[in-house]
Image 1 (cartoon, rainbow, N blue to C red):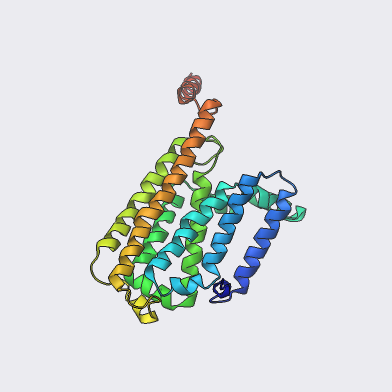
Image 2 (cartoon, rainbow, N blue to C red):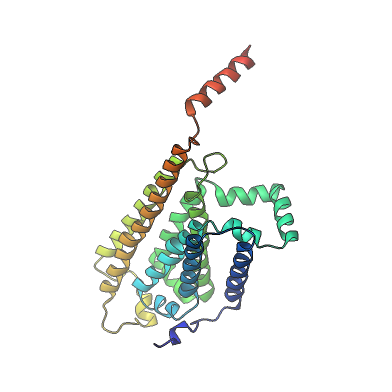
Length: 287
């Protein structure tokens, strides 16, 4: 088997450091928290998929085939972050930090700047919007053209979809009731339905367009000789239309399972009781 495809197409020391540090923190955190085998498998599968998509010869094909580019973003935006956040790795990685770093992080979260950062990364309206926006905006032909030719814009594009993927699945896969979770269990089920619709529409439009929307792939030299631009484009559109939707359905089912578990444990908020309590407080204040 030829392992030459594992050689980075564009070597990035910063990316190597990021993966080594995060992997080391996770391993260290598993010595503090008991992490089941299933959660560890989910984490390492997502971890490896992200690395393969970002730092191997797969990146070469993503720059020269539209459908490979869409498969790459399917992993970066959907599958990789979903697997890692589904493993609930945040608390494990945090436990792997040195004590001084954990204390600093705890204190920072209490500051005004920390609250702003937390709000930006967990807002239940902003995060789903950003999740969809960063899929669609990079598919505008003019923006796609320049992002594929400028290595700085290309890396920013890839990292932006990775980060937005982590932000989104962090909200959807939260197992807690609301509060303290940002989104209610019902909203976590509804959100993937809403976010998948514009992505499926864009994917369908790309699939059925009968002219070349993205000539940059011909300009760079299409990696599969003989494949027409329209065929490449149709496969890429189907990837976004069908596969991305399937992954979001998986996230929806996970959120549904969380709702059922919370309901079975009687941990869902009693809205009728909350309304009565609010009405009682209002009566006391009015008196």
